[in-house]
Length: 69
Image (cartoon, rainbow, N blue to C red; front, side, top):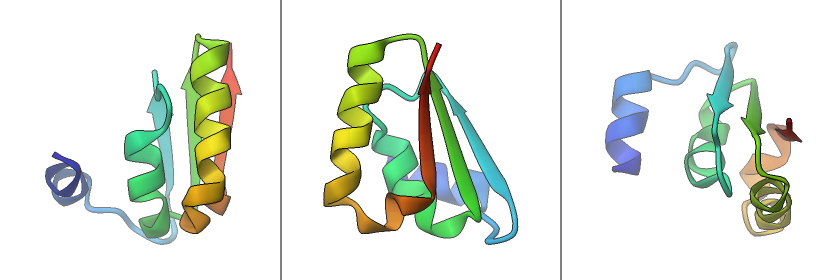
């Protein structure tokens, strides 16, 4: 599923990915290396906290910014 998402989105290193309802960041962490920046938004504070925690296990996700609404 992750590989198919990357294939369909065709990441570009000069583009920004906006991921709404990102949850704990599964797609964001996987796709981050292919983008200049990744912005994740979710309405759940616990999900965003989990996504931020997961950044330490995904060094390529340093370009990702997670926000809760």
